[in-house]
Image (cartoon, rainbow, N blue to C red):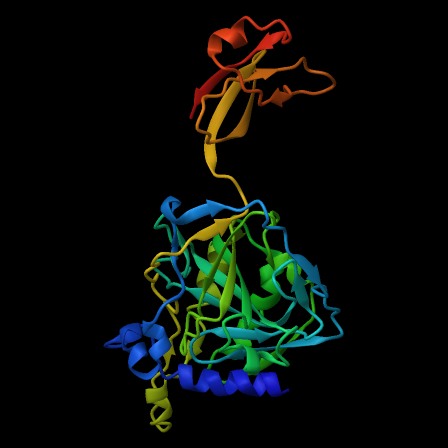
Length: 347
């Protein structure tokens, strides 16, 4: 209860700041100094700042499958739609154990589905989901944790346009009941892990901040590499049509002028002298042809050239590709241990 009241108080302050006003987010530092400071989020992930870390493990999710007899509270807070989560949900394989607090969304507008906060090589995605957790090993609740350097851990899921997503619809179908600021509705429990991408072992990891005021630099970010798909109807119908009453309208209740809640994402921030650690090796895509069959593999960029060979097909429709280093193509072609050769072509 205390955690919910804390977020509501914070939301009332933040909702006075709109992203598309005369000054927008540029005015944030005047009232919230951290917003103009260091370790700010979101950022753009590009190759110059990425570093592979073999110690990064897949997260372990505990209690994410919430029974339908339990309920989440979904609220329109004036700058997003937020759902408060069960305190029995937490994640491991981070420096500490983190307990779930809430999730919320960032999106674009009807005409341009480019509302993600984080970008990859300058590319925006349609929307972005954040699942916020606090360090429950060191702090009693999110209130105590949110301004501490090791206080929060946020999971970010990039959303792109694709087929209809029945798992996200478990939240989206309730948006019609929170069209206006401060409206809330109860959502039956479900398996929150269904909102995550299939590949949980590949992600970006860095230290950053909240993306809304007060912008505390207290977040350990995990941004999953692989996007989750939602349909165009879900992206356009379930976000811009849900209207907020701005703080200006609240001052004139006899003549309110509802505003569309659109483009509620912060622009990417400068990333000074920091690295983003990644749990995957970036590589080039190569195409292999064998016995009129074709398959594709990912080859890791290395400092020495590699040449490849295959073994015979045994009870398989595709060749088994072994990435075996040879000092030269000549030594590969004259090798006696391999019965079949493979042609490599970059695509």
